[in-house]
Image 1 (spheres, rainbow, N blue to C red):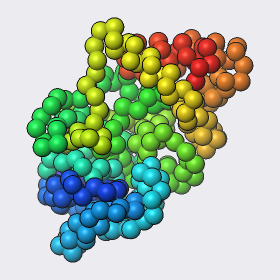
Image 2: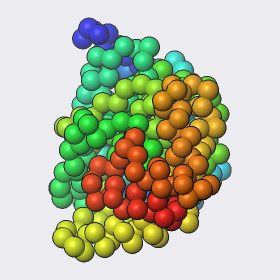
Image 3: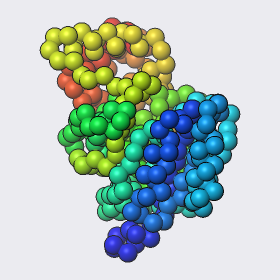
Length: 312
């Protein structure tokens, strides 16, 4: 795609808000100051009771490209799916956006630049590294770099590494999700996009970062522990989550929606994975298969052990 065509690409930013007044103005300032010119910002409020609506109204009156929908509280996952529907299919690229981060001015243009190198008829998704910052935007650390071999459908089956606030996807990817039924339940909206696009399209990871990913009391991600204690924490986390709606449940929903579109080998693998709870033989077989993986080997080991012993 030529430079002129990239500049003329239409982008939609999808922002779901809920009681986000404390940091919302900083985020909205960063969105309206993006270097890419053709942007529409769709905001769906998920039933805020603080000053969130009032702040958005101020920006909406000032900027014609901000559109506000005041909704009932349905949770952030369904709220983002609703934004996918509301925004329509007229845009070339779509961006998920959180209410408490800050985007650097080239975030939109950078994602469009990388995705524009892919055939527009192919579903494609972009995600990037994050700059972890504290409440006052002081730098903490960078997020991990993912090797190309670790990114793909096999990873998306059991892990989400495409953090939503960094995600951009093209029109074809949106169509792939919206033209089929939205899942009744899934682990996260960004995970679902990563799962679907990695299965049927192409995923691009950017080792550079154009977002300040704010850590504060409501969303803090703890620094990773090291040594033996880190293995203990990971194992305990797997055990803690095993009885909740999890990766197998999500894959069963994915299978029910997309099974008629899967290639034979993928169909066989997904069907096997969805049936691990049915028989001990199934769980033992799938536990040793290599069509799924987590980025860290220790996580893959824990996952396979828990699958073999039907602890998921």
